[in-house]
Image (cartoon, rainbow, N blue to C red):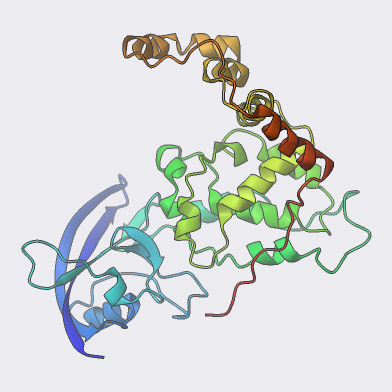
Length: 334
């Protein structure tokens, strides 16, 4: 493999602890390496031979500890498993391809690429990540009882999903995809004795129903945990347990009602069924703006053609419900 020259554009951050202000600037370093060199190895080379003040975390170098998660060329990745040649980009005016490195998003920055991981783990601690005794613990454990548990335990708590989460960006109170995936690990554990109590807590504000299902966490996860899938399964279990008096649950049930009855969403009434008449009245200014733009949906709900076929599919699903705990794809060692 031939040696190539790259420009590493590194975000340098200095946090002033007294007021929380972070001074940011970008610094460029030129380095020669192979395309298969990892970003972490390249950063080590820069730190060892060009600038010893660059700060970032690292540990295992094997995509197991999650310490080296950072923004690389615009996306949160593990520096130890990301090859330079994959993330290098051509930039107008630059003689060589550029790799841009910055700290994780949605996290307090301490220095350069090092972030404060305490708030992230505070969210994980909030869901009480341990088995609780109780009446709901299974007395019989089958061969596939731990399929879902084993899948979500692949999580290495690197924070990539939280860094890319679009809800966390606008709502600091949101517990985040990593904590919810960890919560599902216990809700799905046959030994857990307080599954219903957990689901009740997870149905509260800023928990599982706050997820916008943008799938950024699925794309960012370096271990294929797919946190959003775990969140969807938590919601399914919550509804099955009767926790439907939340905005998210009402919204989901409104969709279900419309598709089964008409085959299409009744956008005119879905807001009222989701947030109630008083909540809808609070959105009158927005409705008036939409009315001016001609974007108010018709009050007469549309009925899709072939609705009988849709109803047949729902009838089949109701008589033969899908197992939401189907075995996940096995994660192969890297």
